[in-house]
Image (cartoon, rainbow over all chains, first blue to last red; front, top):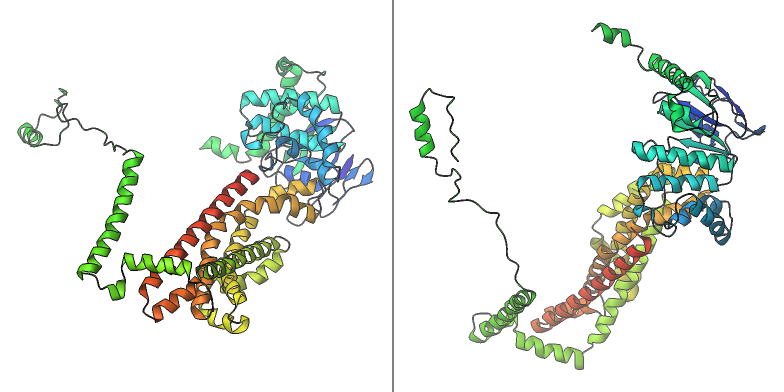
Length: 252
Length: 290
């Protein structure tokens, strides 16, 4: 998957080339306003890039919707539908008959920790459960590539850890190509095969750091020297970009 | 309370005088308590309510008989009751009720449905919404009842003119409320649908309509009242049937008892319709789970 996507005019994004091998887990980290969401919107076909293309499996997918699964920051579950009917939304839109879609979704709901919640409405679910439902909805929309925009950003630390484990299991079961946006450096390193660090004004990728830690990863690997080296590097890169006025502050 | 302030030594006398004069200083003897209101049992409340009604009607009757109240202008309960019986046995009570009921319901249904559809239609095109909106606002600010004579001229003195007035009153409320729902739609929700490859029609059917339903439902109760007002005003202006006509006719012939009877029947009709729509609203709300 390759997409050189320079978006001009207001120059939200500098020319960026990002190629992601199939089945990889890749993270984008960077300060707010660095264009992470813009990249996602371009890949999902919701924004037309000023110039550049999105290629999925070598096929031009620029400006076409419905090619990738996109999970936005909010879970966006429809309050008038049950969890089951929310999860099958993608298939329903692709005109899969409701009965077939439900049959396909039910075992997954059971396997991935939502059994007993199938026929409840989202309002009676906790934040973590809602995110699970939203993620399953994205996965059940059967595309090779899925985009996750800070899916765990609003969760508490404990739930976040659980959800990361859960996501790892899903990823190894489904073998999808995942593009993951987060503010959390540790989360990015722990989950990814490669971390792209982005800078602002204009949005660009300032470094791409491969993560070679063996999988399945343990929580303890966050203490491994290699992990820490990468984390240090990322934080350094982010710091440089976050605070160009740092010396002034230090002087004051 | 034996804590004393010893830090300020200057002007102690004045201070003590001020303190001794302080009558509102809380002590254990005069402790204040949270005011508690004791609830009466239901039967007592009902008794009081019935009592007030009986007293009012009784007072009115006695007043009219002793001459305190002019029965010519105000009539009296016994006469009203006699007229009520006549109205229902030999009069055309049911024709009038049926007429007013039908014009209200038709106007309500037409106005609410069309209004909701117009409101929803604004989702399809921002340009269209921007162009049409000033006209909607204009139409809202016109006192539509002022147009009633014109409506009667165009639609005649039959049922259709009353339906038209009732519709004119309800349609704008429904349009504006539904449009408020459309505007409250989260753009990210649409984004989600489009990212799943949805068509505009799918977004409309599966997202916009269900999302706006609570808004549409929320105006039902307001609209039934407005529709009834419209129907009555239409009957006031020109009609051969209906409770509004009965009131007007009775007033013009100084049959005050009949005025009261018609108002009484009209109020009952209003309460019944209001209660039905409230119940319907509750059911629909449960249906859409919001």
